[in-house]
Length: 197
Image 1 (cartoon, rainbow, N blue to C red):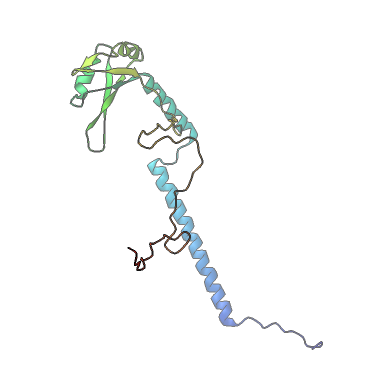
Image 2 (tube, rainbow, N blue to C red):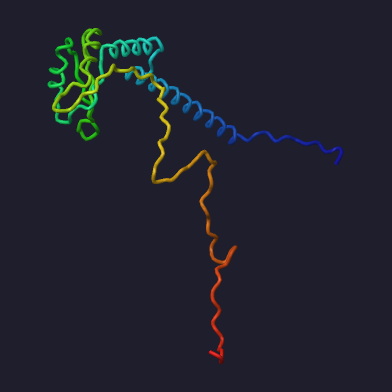
C-alpha cells in the first residue's frame, strides 16, 4: 500500500467535447443577455423612463412655477362645466386652463384647479373664496405643490363602533381549543333511578 502510486486518469475525449459545448452555450447565453440589456436601455431611452437629475429638477421647477399661478377650488357643483368655472374666475385675470377632477367612471369629484397666465391673478382669485356658483359656496385656496415621495401623515381617526383602543401591543384573539384538548366541556351524567322521586 505504501508503494502504490495514485494515477490520475486522463479526461476522456467525450468529456472534453461536452465541456467545450457547455462553454459554447454559456458564451451564447451571455451574448444574448448583453443584447437584451442593450435593447432594454434603448427602449427606456425612447420612452423617457430614464431621466437625468438635471431634467428632473427642471421639471420640478416648472411644476412649482405652474402651481404658483394656480388655485384649488373646492365644493364645485357636480353639474358645473369647466366653461362655467372659467367664466366665474374671468374677472381675476386670463384663465389658461380649468381642470375638474373626475373619478374612474367619469363623474366629477367636486373640486377643480384653475390655472392663470399671470401669478398676480391668484391673489384676485383668493378674494372669491366663499362666493357662490350653482348655488354652492366655493372654497378657493392657493394650489400647493406636491413633493414626490412625501406623503402627508394623517393619524387614524377613532372609530366609534370599534370601542376604545389605546396604545396597547397586539393581543391575539382568544382561541378555543378543539374538542378533546385542554378544558373539556362537562356533560350531565344520565340520572340513575331514584326510588324516592
